[in-house]
Length: 567
Image (cartoon, rainbow, N blue to C red; front, side, top):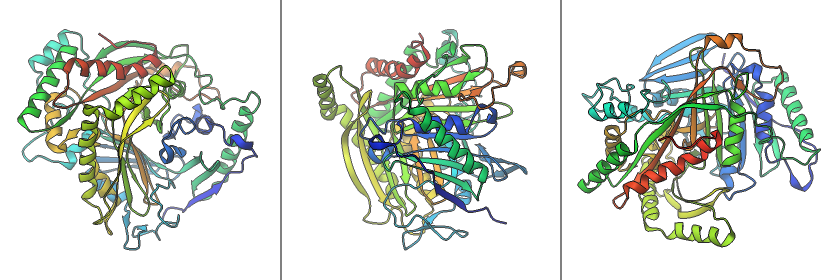
């Protein structure tokens, strides 16, 4: 028997007047629909938390709560060419590249008429293609940076230290870093990708003021749960005129220990010098060089680590179009991603319209209107920022052109300035329409990894980065989002992202069980944290200034944790 159909139905909401839905409805619904007693349920909150405060437009239109539970639930892990699918009937392993797996499990392609279809589906139920992605369950999760090795195999080369967890003998520089106190742990995670099948979801359309319930087949229990959660959340918002608890009551922040930067300042400056040498040699013209801050988080009060509370703190400090919380349980080590990314990697509509929106160039908001306008104007005119953005936009055009229908490739915007609550950013937009018969998974593969996090030309620069960087990036600099049953996809670039790996601690068994129905979503034990940081190196980069930019970029997340940059 095949899978049941996707059931989509509107959720009745009371007349809320001119203000419409509360600003933070999505995070309040997530807290109610994935409570603490469902800790073993993979779940995601794809939260456009800036929808009321920024000019991101369509990128911030919808927020999605997705869960994987019941007889059709699947948890997917991929590493080194092996995909493991865990379902209620057991574990299934396949040896194939990730994108081959995605093509098989998300077999969508644009037909000559413009619809997305596969062998077992009648096409796009959503009607005409307007170029925007349409979520209707599917696969949700993240693809890590190291997946690029599967797209660009190098004959005769085995796993590199950065890919194999630094299994090679340490260099003299590694030994020097160890002596200076840099962490020995190689980087985040053991997986190259992690997804789950979304069997249940809620979609909040902030622009239309609507809430939609989704499930695989009719599910009366889910219908009742969603209706109750919406009613409770709206009722909770009314008395004090609050935004609904989205950022209220985030709990006690965790304590941070063992905080360290992977690459000491001297080492990172040396890597920048090496990147500049490669630019002078002509092997690259832009290198996105990264490092990381690591540490260990422990609950700030008696009880388990409050992951949802930490997420609320991060989103309050930096609202963005792709404010995401992805929660993956595990018997050995659960992993959470907490991201406040402003950058769209790729969207695909059901009809095959692909759009990428790289960001290069950032300035803080000013203390008053005059300073704010001056900072935005300075960013718009700055030659280095414009050069970085144009280089990556050119790379994005090349990536999208690989599977584009001739004549459809367009640069919709070049070096436009968008303003968010805390920053101004320079954004470009490139779009194309996939040629008939092209699998949507192949469009994703052709554009991966994000050019804004590699540099250009992409392949030669990735090989340079492999030599210069001293640990795995993991999820950082990869992408996260969904692959919908409609053939649509929407993926962000994983920047400003905290990766938490929870320890499997025997002492957790002695902890007090969570209170049923509690609003906060808790994970037991302590967690190892990884915060990736990077910057684009071009011919006129100043190494000292690039290091200061790394420190500044860390401030937002580390400030939420109540700590300063280490070292």
